Every structure is written in C-alpha cells, then in structure tokens.
Image (cartoon, rainbow, N blue to C red; front, side, top):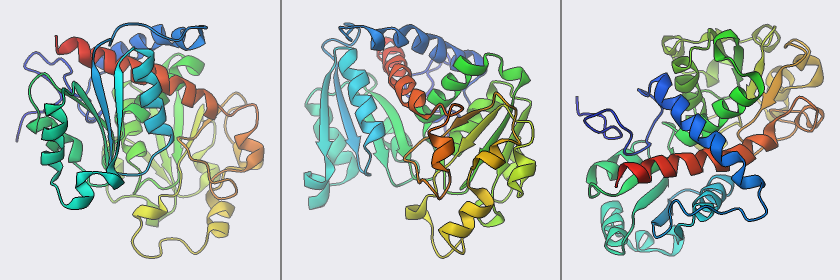
Length: 318
C-alpha cells in the first residue's frame, strides 16, 4: 500500500486530505491552535501576519459558498494572498487536464491549494503530484472526505461539551452519500467518543458501517435517546442515483428533527448541521432557530479551524 501522502516521515502533517489515520494528539493540536484564533475573529482588526507573502489558491471544481468563503476569510485573516479560481471559465472547461491546471498554477507561485472536487481521491492525486513545498487541503472530494468540516464540528463539540470520553453522539440522515459523516466518524472515534450512533433509513446507510465503530439505528426516537449531541446531515440529492426515498415529506416524518424528537435527547443536548439547511426536510425551523442549535457557531468556528490548519501546514513547509 502506498504511504499516506499527508504525513511526512516523522508523522508530521504536510497536507490535510482526510481525518482517517490521524491520532487524537494530532487532532487536539489542530483544535488547540484553532482555539488561539477564535479571539482574532473577535478583534476590531481581524488580521495576523502568519501567512504574509503566501499564495493560496482556492481550487473549487464543485459549487460551494460556505466552505470556499470561510477558507478565503481564514486565509486573508492570516494575511495571505488569495486567488479564487473560476473553474467554469478556466482551462478545465477547455479540456485541460487536472494536473496541467495544477502545474500552471504552481508555476504562478502557489504555496497552497484548497481543493474541492466531485471525484473521490482528487486531493490525494494532486498532493502526490505537487512539489514538496506546496501544501494541499481537501475541501471535499466526492463521497470520501471533508476533513476541515469534521474538525470544525469536533471543535464545536469540544467548546460546548469539553470531554469526548463521556459523550453519546448521534449522526442522523444521509450517511451513505455524506463525506462529512465519514470525516466526523473518523474524528470522533479517534477522540474516544464511547457511544457514537448513526441514524437513518436502510437505503441511506452504507453496508458495513458498523465496522467504523458506530451503532446503527433505523428508528430516530431510539437513536436520539439520551444523546449529548445531535448532528443532522443534508440529503445529498446531487449524489444519489435512483429513487432512495419515497418523498421529502415522508423522510421528514421519520427522520426530520422536530422539537418532539429532540426531547428524546438530553435536555442540554446541542444540535448541529453542516449546512446548507433544508428546512422541513431534515430539520424543523423551530429546532434550527432554537436555543439548542449551534449551527451558526459552527460556521464561525470553521474560520478559526481553517486558519489553524493553514498555519500548521505552512509552518511544516519552512
């Protein structure tokens, strides 16, 4: 098997491609670094000079608003030079290969690529190809991984719940098509969560998901019983092939998070969602806008976490 391209010979992070294989100490070091950046986002002047002179290219081959914007904000707050590539108007649409595009951007002085792509493994492919000083961050690849989303989610949980070793967490919805779910599961198991559950219809749960260290529930009320954290997932309609659900209304009836279903969780349970929200499909507005939701703080913390990842990677290239 080929070596893990995101770790150097000393086990130090040189790219961030997936959370799978990262140990708890490394994850905590990223979260601790992110903690130091939360205060930057609360200042009147929201800038630090840590990445001054670095050129960061947002290379998004798949539509994104929230992820691309938070990466851009994070890079600018670190004083980096940021280039957002409009893939629809780029040479990719004229038939240029992925690696040719990357090579041309590298020739323009790129220090880091933030890559989102519809094909699983695209970020790994680029990381194996680029020059040793260039860093690659996976901003989502197919159904495979979305590591910074997984990290910002566990950062949010740590802020509200502190100790992972005592938590019961339920991930609810479209597990099969969700790269976020995979990243969350890898992060939470590495951090020692003793009771990690996935909840959803059989058609939206991958075969053998139990092998990842989770307990499977098809009944949402049972799956939410006494949990500390409820992590809702968006239905990934764009990645589904064929009809997997009878209707959005039927899905909401059984797997949409309502105030009544949330009462099955602990009274101080927090509700999370990676966005964008489909109100009335996976979550009721009364919950999304309610006191237990931490959905907007997730977005805010995402900037600090992405600042942390970029800083750590940039430091490893010097």
